[in-house]
Amino acid sequence: MHSKKLVSALIATSLALSGCASIIKGNSDNITVNSLEKGSVIYVDGAARGVDTAMVNIKKGKPHTLRVEKEGCKAVTGESGEAFEPVSLLGILLDFGILTIPIDMISGAAWKVDPTTYTMTPICMKESG
Image (cartoon, rainbow, N blue to C red; front, side):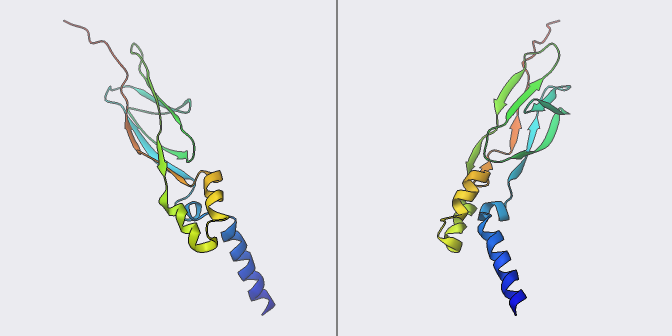
């Protein structure tokens, strides 16, 4: 009987230390970055992630730098966007949002990456023939 109470207390504590969005949606999202210029190298936060197309898992709650480069062309840089994750409001049902919503806000889980697909193409001068 004592062990059931202990297990229940541990489960309740772990739920209280995590927000609803972090439990249900996690603290990261996948994005896809595409380039229409063949041979373009795609960078996310300064790290090369692919050529022409890259699928990358990024942490929520902060903007990430996206850059597309190709030799002989002008690189294009941008940032990932974000939007509020309504799932974090489910914390209202658990603890009136007193702990769970701030935890989601601090962990970044209260946000989602929006959009999740980016098309960025370096500016290349076409040779006239």
